[in-house]
Length: 142
Image 1: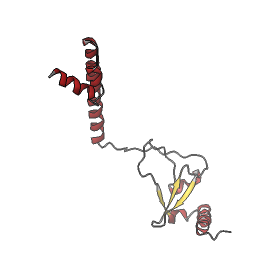
Image 2 (image 1 turned 90 degrees about the vertical axis):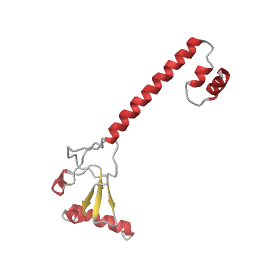
Image 3 (image 1 turned 120 degrees about the horizontal axis):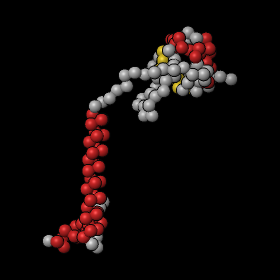
Image 4 (image 1 turned 135 degrees about the vertical axis):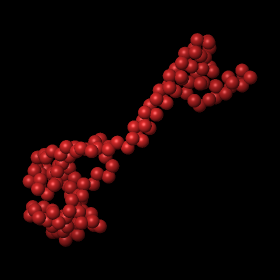
């Protein structure tokens, strides 16, 4: 029986168990047992705390918005919707349109930030930019 347990321990893929089975002294086997027990307890603790945090479904309920310097990093056109997506930092002059820059967390899901095309057309500079964009995307801009 002892030989079968030792063979199982030496061929186990669970970290720590082969070290316990191959230990040359009883003290070494005890040390590896303690290390394995601490690792197992740590895994259970971190797994349950992460799972409970995930199952709380926390939400951000307050978003602090700040405006930055005049800099637009790009426009992307969406054919199906009546929206234009503005990425990056937006000029202070566009505050009345609600085109603001915000700091987002390091992990953001589906952060597209769509804005109504009808509101963008109210600003002549943006209307000119959209015209140039549409002409360049059609290939008719010369």
